[in-house]
Length: 491
Image 1 (cartoon, helix red, strand yellow):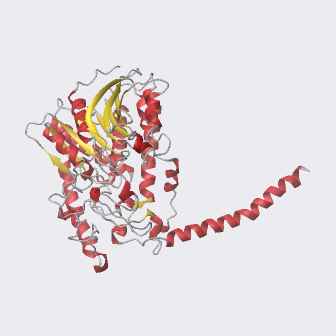
Image 2 (tube, helix red, strand yellow):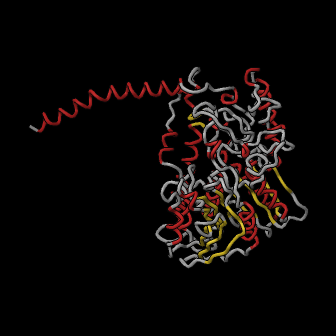
Image 3 (cartoon, helix red, strand yellow):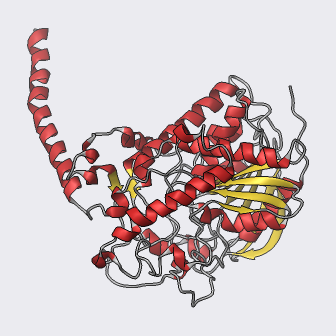
């Protein structure tokens, strides 16, 4: 009696599986044929890019920048010179002379930059995010240099050139570049002047990853402290799918298989297209960081981790906002770590347009008396005003000290966003207060109207907050963090 009952489900399964396989194959075939075809900037393989395999010959920042010179020359011959007449449009970053061409700027911020004040008091290595470029660290870098720090804004491998770099880079390439830069800065500063790590998004994950290497005994310079902006400490578990490679993308005619999304490249300093490899490499990095923190913490707290100052928007559609707490901060011993959380705009008039309590992380953390890290929340003074205040709670306490900041939400802004934190309101590319009249594209000033589905650019370009109305506050907090004495290490 058992055997016939067992045979029935197996028979049904045997009938259904081939059909499901056919449907899946059909869906994948449709995906490969849908959307734009890859262009030369999606296909070029730039041989002069830095990789971990080149770390033995490229050992200093001077070596790295010399290789970068050759890389950008290769970008010119293999990409820019091969852009067809029909692709030379007004807002294509690879169309020479267009409004999206980085060469229209006085400085091409896609490249590694250095600020070297006379008699530096220390140094900071700045790490940008995924699909990003050193431009995202420009404003912070200029400010830190004005305070006397020597600053390096490192262009990470696969970035700043063409989106095809997202198909080829690996986590190990980025890790090797960070190690090279930290060693170089430590040698410049000598043993007595501090070196800090400042990371944005994926760059923040790299900063934590590097620090874990130091704690595990790697022969690397120890950072004095970490400043993390929108840290990509945890991403969606679905990203693991991106690590499954069919191999089809290397077959002529199937190049589309490498790409999760192909979008017009209108931004001079950030790729718009996104590869499956990029998602997979980020998943590798973040999952490794989570496992290593948990292992080092064991059943207790992780002592000796350099002080961390993290900035986060309570709503973030790129990474899991709560992961910076659950994966990192709550595992660290109370050694001057702090989270600065930007709440949503809780003005009554704005709240009516939002989903129910879009920022639950804020209330949860404020009510957590066992926090091992300090917490500061930037939120409305009350529901009738756009003016904001600072709510500060020390580590291990739910008691809050309130302080007005003399800052306010702009009338049209309902929250910050993952991409907003590093940029000031007057940022020439992403700022909503950027002076008009530049000869380059100004994405923060975009205001267009029409029917849904007509524009080739994604909707988020038009609605997502791209700059931070509280950027001056962010800079002041970084200044205070860097000038404060480091805690004594507990053995």
